[in-house]
Length: 165
Image 1: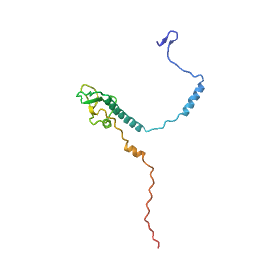
Image 2: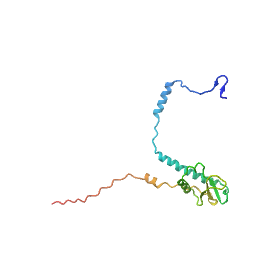
Image 3: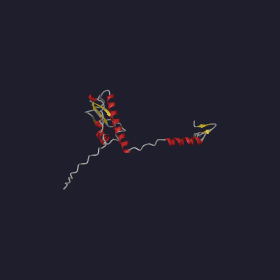
Image 4: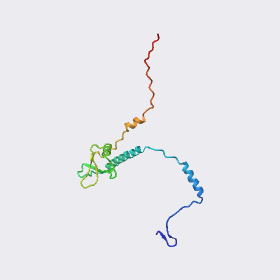
């Protein structure tokens, strides 16, 4: 398949410009017109990705719980949804606590099930139609955005009363 009886073996494909000078000038012009990317705060970016990963897992659990027809845990009073095998190895205890607090279920517990691999979120069958909790904005972020420019304080009047004689 990769050999032609008349031409032999296909090694590579190379495109050559009809006018190399025109190509160089066009590439130089495009390079000069590029907008340089602004430098961002890497730690903020990583934190945002981390928060989004936890929120995505919470949304996935809520959607999967709604999709469960009948309770599927071995004891049958609970709905069981497996936590993502991609989320669990990366999650710290603090991440699991945040995930726990994001989910709207009062009967929520994380556990392993006999005969199954992975960690499962167990929810009482009566709570399976609850919606995702609305995330409240961070107080720290609100304070940082609402900082108004500081008005300089008036200097206190001095109490240097000079007496004239």
